[in-house]
Image 1 (tube, rainbow, N blue to C red):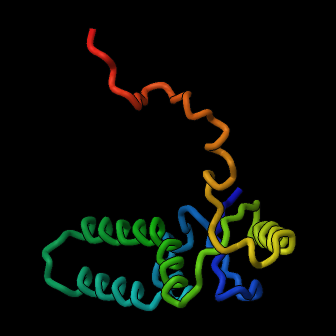
Image 2 (image 1 turned 90 degrees about the vertical axis):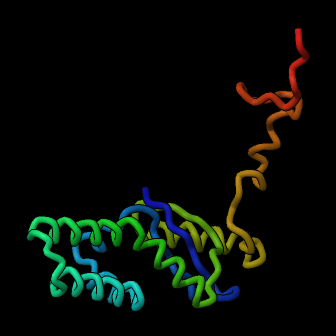
Length: 156
């Protein structure tokens, strides 16, 4: 099951953008094409500049060292690619409206729009937070988890 963040422009659910959490395998395998597909222009320019420096500059690196650096660049794209997409959406004025999960992208859309219809557009102002859902209020204030000491102990 994949977790998706949902980004909205204003209160219009038709402009919802779903960005999955986790490693972007396509960004790892073909970084420049993935960056172009998602219109991450600045990241694409940085990737191209780094590739030109590795290939054309006289760095006196072995072929294996250059390949390892390309692998590290691809790994960086795979690890951070989805976060770069989220930052781009925020720069475009889309706020994170919800967090949903689903086996596929379509399932996540169904879960989001079901919740959207159930709560109405007024209920999606902030992403869900465990403290708001009564999760932490179930523990009495006098009980503390093991290892947390709210009051200093008295000396013997």
